[in-house]
Image 1 (cartoon, rainbow, N blue to C red):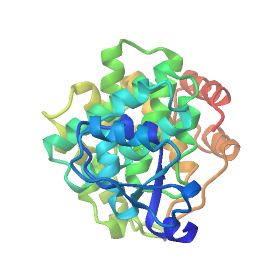
Image 2: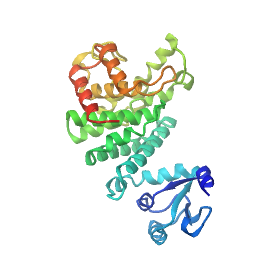
Image 3: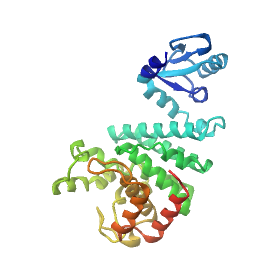
Length: 322
């Protein structure tokens, strides 16, 4: 049974299932080891109401619950619709909430990159960024828990989730503005690299050094993202999308902004973006550990960051073991 379930099924908790939306969008399986059951059997079919699911689960307290691996996408779609109640559920540990939220956010961002003009996908990214804010405000352990799920390998969509988590944490640590401004910041942070959806994977994932022409194409992604999202998100979110590669000394792009012509929100996003990029494996370089990354930002990127916010970032990381 063990190898069978490992190869074909993924365990889920009854708290997750009971927190789900109105009807199941996948088949739910169960197995009772105490009765010598050797293979998962269907407990509730797709379309079963939440009331019937709750009753079935409560009647089978000794059972282990599973979904098929190929139904994981449907499972996380199901969970995405219920993130509010999941975050508020006192029975779910922080680690479990983080796992659901991070996977849902990553799935949303993958869909955004596949179809960035979809109004539904943009709204989903808004909702999931708001859920990250809500989680971080209600649970002090949420940020390290979310960041512990980050892959050491770089993927554009998970990088965007990481930058949102780092950025939201630092934004709150500094105390930059109102709740509505934080929501705008979070949406901009999670969408900051959306312009890369218009760039070939051959360039994005190139293992060697980029040619000058390829690098110019890469440098176009903030403007690409701005054009994709203009009129669809707030000016505050657009600011992050357009300016997350600016540098305090004016050496950044696309507008070569300098000093305080860069907004405080963009300064925070810049720090989060660079730090996450340095601490994940990229096609052209290995991940650095946190100390090496901070040392490189301090000594190898002199003038790139506003000093006051860089110091705040160091303090924030020291309080946020990841």
